[in-house]
Length: 496
Ligand code: ADP
Image (tube, rainbow, N blue to C red):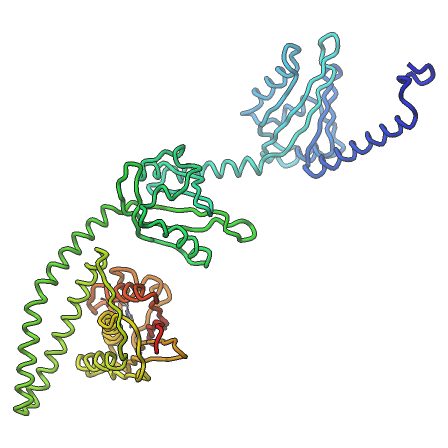
């Protein structure tokens, strides 16, 4: 020891100065931590009964600066349900046989407005040589918000777990991050087996490209809803599912994950399949007699032309147009059945569009006297596509234009060419379609429920077929429409 200062002799004044500076720096750092985290500190001396609270601690409790705090007052504001437990923990911490640590979360009632808050307090007891508590110091933090959000996520978790649908979340790389009980029931894998694994485990090999396609659609801001597809269970069973997928975004709007709701629709699909089989069978049976009727009409038509019998000619031309309409409806039913079985085949050829459009427009004109069907700008355009299927698309669009314009008006089937980009459109002056219905128009069996058109019959498959046929041609059907003004359906194609 240094005789004068009582300090170890090796410490110089410069050392002490340095230590004091360091101490000041640590204090400043601690102050910063305390004020940035709103961490309260307290100091309890059981021997004298003294209790000291920092400014932050008083703020947490809502205790005014001038009010003196003591142990009794502190206990008074503990929530009744937690009081006993907290007192026991304090006793345990002050037991010299224990390790002198204290850590608890409890509810308190603020002094100023009586409002309930959750706090977490941690402390350390120091004992003197007699085993008495010399001081008991600690910190306190208001954890109400995090506690509430934990409760909220627990509630959400319970809802997700009780859902009938499989609810799964995954990273953008397709790694599963959550898996609810229904996902377990649907796919057979437990959450332990799936969390951390790739979602590709559920995809049949022929559908592996669906994952990047879905992600690309979400990145484009598109919604993926009621996407019907096939997945494989743990037991190698294929099931039909309907998927609705939405992006999980961070505060900046970047996609950081995906949440997916999968519904097992195997039953529904089987029901549809049975319906399709029935439709296909009936349609097939109707085709032969109808072809025969049309042949007789053609023969009679030729005969009445020779005989120059105008009345018979007109009547037979109309009968032929109606029989042709029936043929195209049967054609639609058969296409639907083929589509469902994945048997639709596109046979592309290069052809002159005008001939096809003229033929369809004049057939359509035979079906109506209250509409004027016009062909606009379709000359000298050649496209490479399946002629029959594009014909089927146009027949559907044109017959809808007639059907849904009960007051008549002009119907245009037209082309707009820009270099080799071609827009083909069908416009009418009919009842129009609301923005809401426009979203679902191309779904299978979807029909608008509206007073104005409730007497117009149909099956809701025409536009679905149009959309599917065009999808097979790598293009898309679009609609612009205004209620009571009219609609324009159009799609783009390459032309020469
Ligand atoms: P369908 O005509 O047999 O009901 P579609 O699939 O062809 O079936 O059409 C689906 C629905 O879209 C129709 O029920 C109708 O409400 C609406 N729709 C189709 N075309 C038009 C149109 N040109 N104008 C107004 N509504 C239309």
